[in-house]
Image (cartoon, rainbow, N blue to C red; front, top):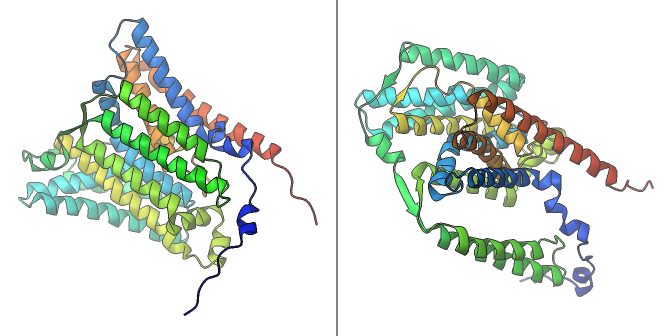
Length: 404
């Protein structure tokens, strides 16, 4: 039996303490700009509502409404971010979502069970993802051309499936499966989350002082956790009526973030998107990490289509047209690179929330619909500009490596 020698104390203690610059790194404009923008938009609409005598903008009803409106684009923004990280993108998600909805309703109207109908709809999305992945990675076609072609082809297939007509169902079991409201005591759960973040910060700070890590995140986690706990007890509602679809959205976001942040799968995906040849030489199965994001995109697109028909009980061949552009805009707002190797699913979720907070705020403030698209376009271009300028500024400030 062999024993592992303990790490020398001088090796552990030799790690330098994080500098103030390192501690402030997560809060740079490039890193957290989308969060600052979201907070500014919320503050603007809240103050505008107060000054104009309207109801409190962040009331439990309106905040739950914003989350519910964000569900479909938010789910697709998460998987689109994964696809962009891998170095590809998918323009067919809107058409695939409509196809999944059409297949589900068609199977449901034949008298099949709701489980069979949902599996058929999800299967159609997975099939489209496999086709996209095989054409892009297997044959080597350009992802833009392939997904643009499948977007057009899938719309044509949906027209054939529906005979160019809207289809609907009288059955309520699909709506019962994915519909409904599940109230939550946001005050208690947010306080618990804040205490958990605070505890994580204490552990991180202890490891920093022992020299085991040098991240510098400990004090910030402690401060943000304590702030969240106090803020929740003061401002959060005791009854927050969130829909089932919001919980599905939240679960997908958390799982995707955990996988990308803490697993070897996530690290390999970033490596493949950042430098495909280096990843291949490192022994990473590049084809698997290129095709799988397309499959996830197809699966989640079909899921979004099913969530759509569970709410409206109907679908037409033109439904969700242009959805892919909104999804890509949300990912770009979150700072995801179009060239692969960089992105964060939680920031893409915030990007989607920004878009729908603007739409919701325009409605609450009775602003003209003619200006909404213009303002959204300016916000997207402005966000992309801020990220690029912040990246250039950070590159200039980084010290150059010493030449041997």
